[in-house]
Image (cartoon, rainbow, N blue to C red; front, side):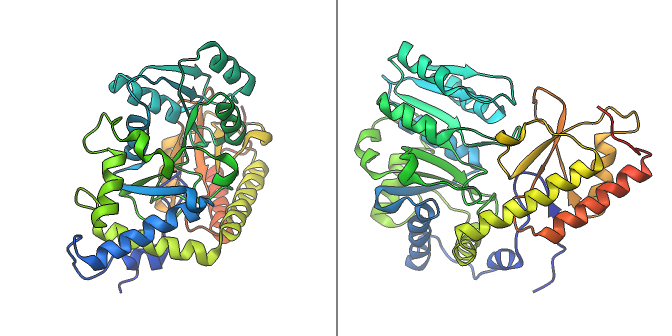
Length: 372
């Protein structure tokens, strides 16, 4: 197979993929209605909950979509006409859930914070106690707007004490940060094929409790993103209702195999090592970060933009891009930032090489000391 140039993507997904995952895309053409392909899909469906210790309590459904499609499927399928949603909104992805609720006219209340503030669980408790119409709560696990990891385990415990079901956007934490569904007992979590699981973009999935199937049967507001109908299609025929991205499915199968080979502990430790190298290296260069250390996820850093007149994000991006490194702009945080993530098929030497090029950029730009 032709060698493919390896770029170091420090954006929060799609991430850098391994050669094995890239090669998995090159397979003989097959109709996705064939039993061979249905068996492949079934294996993936069985393995997705294993990544987060779902046990026998959870099942999984896949959709051909970006991660937002999976979130839309969970939100529009879980909440009945008589239900009401509480949204924890402290970043752009909490806001996106609010936008979905508005579009589908789902009753909701939002606990809204500046992008970069940590949720107050006591405040969430107060909202739940004051508004007993709330039946569901949605929260982002790793909010990639800022690099914050929200207190999901604590929120799940609180919500369940009020008989409120929980929907967790685990887009950029699934397979990269510790998640234990036997501990959380979240009713629904959502992720995609192109972030910490290290597959290719094109598939989203919802992992949810099997005992909810009958309950959600008549809830859905969407034709395409119908969680119950998609699950029934898998159960009855082994197929998606609509055409899957065949080659992306093969790549996800390989990505799952590589995850189990590396082990969850190994994946998490590799990401943590990458993060520590990045954090310390940027500190040495003089950069500062949006979040205090206790709120950092360990996967993504929101780096404060310098006030140096010589600094320009676009110029910095282009300099690094020409040298094989992709960085990411900020997304509406309470201070101006750019973002660097360590998810994907990245290793210590990749981060070290990036830091060398970042220092070179500062030197050639005449930024001898970063100021704020």
